[in-house]
Length: 204
Image (cartoon, rainbow, N blue to C red; front, top):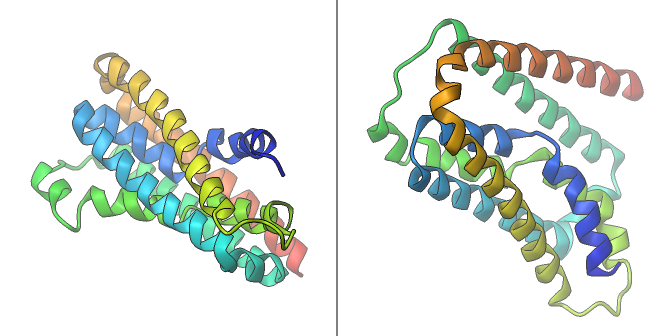
């Protein structure tokens, strides 16, 4: 597969809302641009690691097992369900946020890193696309790294654009955060629940 087609397909998981998008929006609304950029870089670091590992071998193992693919989908749906529950909780029981906590090893830096590292969309995308990307044994060993770097860069550009929009609009959006959290939380819970039901029906 040539790079143009790969980047075109990459837009599907990148532009669809997920854990990385939600964290970028949250960090942009709560903090300044420097904080948001640092957390975005942490997310992209995790994404680059996952994409590279998948393309250098793990993707083939996952693509060969329907059970593993289903497991990743379930894990992704559960992750979205947890995020939805957290959004709903913050809508009705808002908590104070400490920059000291955010800057610690247990704060949002690691949260952003693991959102990129364990992002279900990245896992499913590269696992399912692995035969098309690297099915030919004549592919040079640097090609997987080029794919993972290109994907991470494209994701970074998309999330940076989203972050910029919310940084500019945060003064207007902040008074509406509680209602937005409630709506978003209910929507994520509903979508993830429906997705889990579909997966369970397909398995049984």
